[in-house]
Length: 618
Image 1 (cartoon, rainbow, N blue to C red):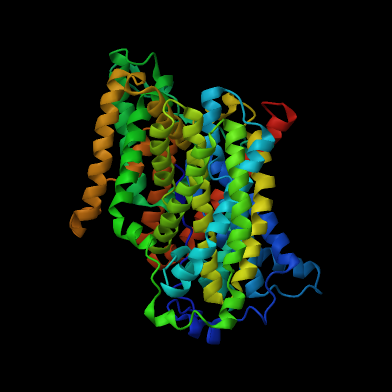
Image 2 (tube, one colour):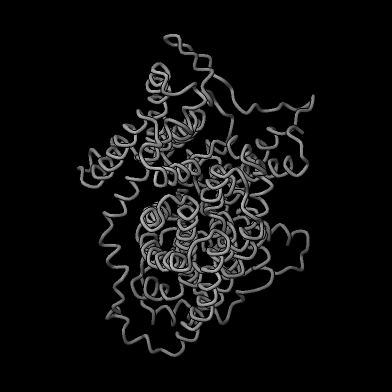
């Protein structure tokens, strides 16, 4: 599971507010400008494709390193705005990119940077850890492209229902539209946010660079600063990751995620390292501290996250029920026959023309690549379509795409349909997760375009083109960044380990798990359910004290150094907000996003360079 962290730049105080609740007729008469303003231009597509390709590699690295995925729409909007204005200084004859061109660029970049490769580091990574060998390059290329395209086409029938008629919020889509409005209105706060994001981006690049080079005139940052601690004959310096990792990526991520999740992670990690780790070593349940993270503790952490995710999903039963209710809104029922609106909306025939051949190709690919029978392959895509519908509605109402829950439902389904087959289990879940995230991402961008008056057909084409850019970037990056199983194990990838653990447990049964870890599995599962129920039904004054199930689960999968850096980032954001709340609201997210993007891009490039050159140290 790679949870998406939406990046929302607060624009509530800008002078360019957007009306987010308007009828379809009013929208066409007063907002729509897609026929009069340049939108789907070559420069917008090229800029979006380049930025999206870079961000896809950045997101691949963060999903492997820390198990989180970051939306790229707002970062791409800001970087495109800044970059194009920089080019105009060099080439004065270049005209300003219109707001709809920038929105089109955002769709291309988002498809490339976030919709493609969402399960490369998890499902395919888990398969690499299990089998020890990489999947064929061309197979993964086709797999990534087909699943992303299926998600794009499946979003076609949902757009008019969820965005035009029901006016679902899609908060990240509103935020991206508001940010663009503010930038083009020359809002002082938005321009300052853009500058701070770019400065933080270069700072992140610098930190990543300092982890590579070691010249006499330049200090090399260590990968880890160990803490020397010994309690009751337990030498904690021998525990993997027990120290501080000088990483602005992790600190920036903590600034975005917030105090509740990060405190839960930090406390959970302390409990593991200081209490349960020494205990299981003392009873010789594990041979040494190297088997704690990614081994014994993995089962408890996975149980917490899986049961909490499925429980939260089940509690959204009203959202799920509404996903299958396509009754037309009375307010807009008479407007569906408006010929002019129909001419700019993505036609249903595009869905048929695109989906049918993609459906056939994906089913055949599952069969020939992983020996998934034709009936089971068909089931995987049909199930993906149903769950994508639910995921899009969840994203529209809550801004959270339940990728993990989608994948786990598929894994549980195939544990019954194809027991003891880990490859089928992982790859079927990969199909579901990729399709769901691609559909939800497209609708988020279409929400931005709807608010800005964009042409939906042109925006759809931009998203579709972005899939090409993302696929040809993220797939080669995976092989170069992770040349073998040992390289992936070096990352100790939390989400990848969780996918692997679920597949192994479903395939081998409970006896496969160490005895004390079985109790951890049961207790962790109960904790995950209880925490979600408490969060849902507890009184507001107690909710802020309820630990985050996601934070506690990740604490038992990732090393202490990660949780410490997350905690430091969250504390920085918290203290900053207490000292100057308005200033923190304006700058916290853009600075944190820049730090994350900068270091992850540089770190990914370093990993690729080292792999490509065949050198371990440069």
